[in-house]
Structure formats: structure tokens, C-alpha cells
Length: 373
Image (cartoon, rainbow, N blue to C red; front, top):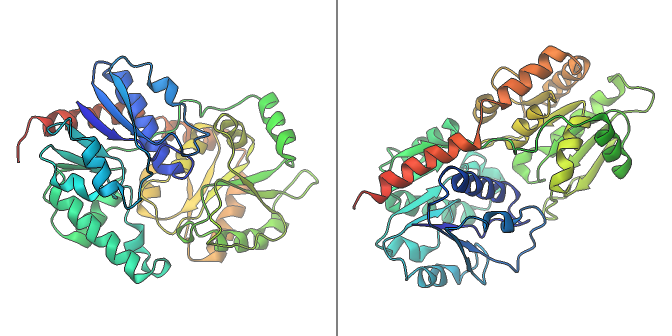
């Protein structure tokens, strides 16, 4: 039996929620007889993930939890709710494991997405970084195994915490099954829906400091007059949730679309001439893979995780150098219609599979469940 903390499957956690949902969906497809208890919080807004699709599995049970992740009460309530299954394996798909789970007799697995607050300390308060570091030490001391989405994150664990006792298994994410090139009619419909020009560049993600959007906006301001267009100036679209704690002046030629419905994303990707992903640090970088799966070229930061994800199919820039970013965007824009480049992008995306990640995850479940402290 697996106890899976799916409370992150909601709008507040777009990246972690996507990972948790798609992983669980793939696990149930690969091993439908696996008994899973899924913790979820129905009060949280969830416009993206249909839990009804998962409940079609005969061995999946939903366990309602009235509090979201990071709520102080979770540290005692979650262990109390799981008291019926003291020996079952618990998988928490993020680092913030409720404290009471450290005391359970059964095995614990956590997925560590990235160590961005330690890589970019200037963007986080001292106290928050201290708690973040402490919690990772607790997870490392208690977990029987750890998942990361990239080799870059696995190396970061060793860099910041020294030799790691539990095994660290790399289980990459993959593009959603629906991320495929869409027809011209669908692209035209999405352009009409959002009032988009014929040519646009796209960024998908949130506006947190690590995403480096201030430099992207400045690079776009510099490069936009040089870009070829069909009469109407090209637009830079920012699609995704917006955190009001991090205001950003968009300027001319930049629009924020907000959250785009899941079913509309593939057409929005397909219609883009270029995806730009300027993060200072990432644990994976799923939008890069999603764009490539739709046959869209990518210009992105030259950081280890994005090198893993994009391989040789992207064009890379120094994310801290605005002029480097502008130059690479211009070069990528000029070559974005190259069919060879677009085919290379799709081939790179096809190397990643939720089914393969589910198999690696299940192998670890079996290995850990058969062990004892």
C-alpha cells in the first residue's frame, strides 16, 4: 500500500501539482492493482487536474484532508489520519514533509524538486533559508529513499549536505500526453481567444525571482525592434500564475495572460514562434519539454538542469547577461522556422516518458517496502 500526499494537486502548486498528478496517473496505468490512498484537500481551487480520472482505478481511495500543505496543523493531523496504516509507505512529492511523519514506523519517501533557495540565497529571507535547510536535513535523516527530477538536483544535495545516506533516484518529468503540435485551426482559435498577433514569443511559469523575468523583459525591449515580423510587432507572452509579492513592470510588447486552461496550452505553445525560459536556477524545467513536444524551438538559460532537459535541441544564453539573452533570442527567432530544428526538439521531448518514470518509482517503492530500518 502507498499513502500518497496529493494535497499539492491544486492551482497553488502548478509545478509540483503537475508532477504529482501525472506521476500518480502513470503509476496507476502501469500497475493498476497497486493499492493507493490519496490525500487531497477538496476545498483548494483545482482548475487543472481531474481527480475523477484517477478514482476510476479500483484500488485508489481518496482521503480528505481539511488543511493544505504548509499549514501548522498538518504536522499532527496528517500522522493522525494515517495511523490506520502504520507500516505503509508514505510518498510526499515535495520537501515539506509534515513533522509527525518523521516519527512513523513505516517507510518514507520524498521528492526534492530543487534547492533554489540555497542556490539563490539573495531572493529568500535568512530565517526562511534556515528553516528550508533544517527541513531538508530532517528529510535526509528519515527518508528511506529520495527522488529528484534531475542529476543537477542530485548533485546539489551532495554540494549542500555532503554524502547522502538514502539512495537518490532520478525520476524525470515528461511532457503531458496532450502536448503535441496542434492544427492551424486550433492555433487560430487560441489567437482569437486571447487577441494575439501572428508572431509571439512565449514564457510559461510563475513570476518568482528565480524565474528572472526582469532580465527577460529588458532583453525583449532591446531585441524586439530587430525581430522579423509580418507587419505587426511581435509580442512576448507570459503565461502562468502571478505572485503579487514580486511586482514586475512589463513594458511595451509584453503581456501577462494569467493561468491558461490546461486544454488550451498545447495550441498556445504551437502558435509560438519561440519559447524563452530565462530561469536563474531550476530543478527540471518542464515548460521547455512541453514546448519541444509541440515542435516549438527553445531559447533558455545555460544551467545544468536545462542542459539535461533540452540536450542539444535548444539555444542557450547566460541568464544573468541581458545582452547575451537578447542576442540568442534574436538568433533563435531568425531560425525558428527551420524544420530540422523543430524535428530535433520533438525528438528530444520524446526521450522523456511518464511511463518510464512511473516504472522507476514503482521499483523504488518495492525496494523500500521490502526493507527495514
